[in-house]
Each structure stands twice: as C-alpha cells, then as structure tokens.
Image (cartoon, rainbow, N blue to C red):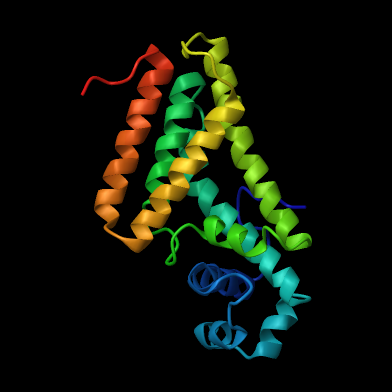
Length: 207
C-alpha cells in the first residue's frame, strides 16, 4: 500500500481529477462525494472518471494518497533536516497550523475520512490506518530522539505525545470549522507552546 511523499506518476488528467476530488471529498465526505459533482468540476463524464480509476474504491484510495501528499508537504517536509526537540516542535507546530488552516476546503481531510470509515472494514479504512500509523511514527521518532539527546526532561513516551498532539489537532479542527478560526488557532497554539515548554522544562509556563 502506497505512502507517497510526492504525487504518484500519472497523467495530467489524473492529477487534475485528484486535486479537485480531495477538496470536494473534504467537504462532502470521501464516501458521500458525488461523482456528478466531481465530473462537473473536472469537466469530464462519469465514464471518463472511471477510465482513470478501476472503481470507486480505487478512486477513494487515490484521493487519500493525494491528501497524504499534501499533508506531508505542509507538515512533515518543513521539519526534514531537523533532529530531536527541534524536529518535534516543527512537526507539532506544523500540525497545529494545518489543523486550524485551510489546506482542505472542508477542514482536516483525515478527521472527516476516519470518522466516515472507522467502523467500516475494507481497503479505504486500511489506507487511512496507514496514514495514522505514519503520523504517529513521525512524532514517536522525534520524541525518542529528543529523549536520547536529553532534551525532554519529563517521563513520557512517543506514543503518548502523539496521542496528545493528535487530540489537540482534532479539537482545533472542530472548533475552527464550527466557530471562530482565529480564536481556535490561538488557543491551539497556546496549548502547544505550554505542552512543549513542559516537556523541555518539567514545569508549565507561568501565567
């Protein structure tokens, strides 16, 4: 199963389809996405869409691939070349900006897609699980490196930090989508700054 750093090779038409589809799916839902809407957005027929993808499921997985490519470019690639606590900070701060931002028209693509498929076994659910495992591993590896460098002073694990970071991101996404985006982002950034300070110093930020 693919975990792309860059858009997979394919025709320009396939790329155009996926660029449109990932945005539509972030709003309508990956499974609920109307092929008629996608066909209209890409100025193609439904049969034309399926000429590029074997089935609706294959299209859905390709959309998840595209969403991960965009996520990596926004969150993970800016932290490349960094190590330890600096990498962890870049990853979590990048994720915070992503969760409160507008990379996807409908908010965090993965929050919506996992909600759709978490109770539905199949290849799409499995692919979303690969994404989540990748993200958890990125955080875990950064935490483990920071602990080895003695840059984290409290007793913790990479798994627990990843769990916390994803929870903050989900809360930020929901509040940004349902309320005041700027306020939600400010709260999310404050929570992240306080937590990172705690990891590095063993105490919370003074109020």
